[in-house]
Image (cartoon, rainbow, N blue to C red):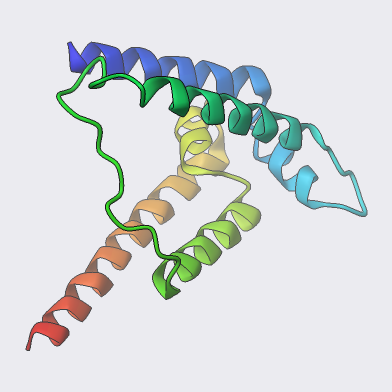
Length: 143
């Protein structure tokens, strides 16, 4: 059941990305181009997502457990540390340079976007390198 629910939610998310135009990196890059071809539509998409998440989380977390799981998996710790700031900066730079966020990049691959074919392998390489860095740091700290 969980797989079917997750598949349906992923498809819904992907369809929303296509309808909103967020699978097109030019949309993102035009949003960042304040003094050129600025396109404010990304702000409306983000605003809609924030409002939906704000009310959605409040509704869902009132339930004793998720629909497709045994318990909610919420962060146990919420400090804003150097790792959070550095990771956010790297994510933002990658988004600004490539014009893709991970979700829209996956959607863009299904639409045949050549930029996504370059972005996704680099994104996975970056994720792998980050895991290596954390593992090596953990090994050094443990020694």
